[in-house]
Length: 75
Image 1 (tube, rainbow, N blue to C red):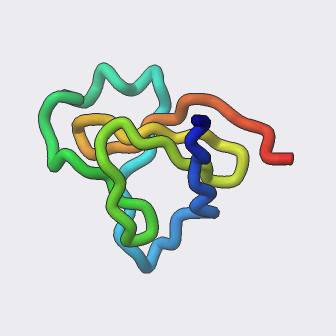
Image 2: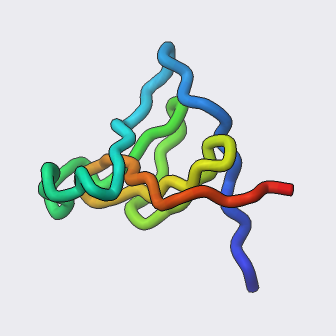
């Protein structure tokens, strides 16, 4: 069974959002430490979850940050 990746649109600055970083910036964060959850527009996502913001694929990592993992076509 293929799990559908939720489309979350753009981050709303008025809502709770975890930081979004590039893959090359991962070394700047201790991905083993953090809240154990990422937020996108007030919605919590567990570690390891993927979301699509437009065509941008984001993965929730252990430090409670979103890491850019590339792009996906949505058509």
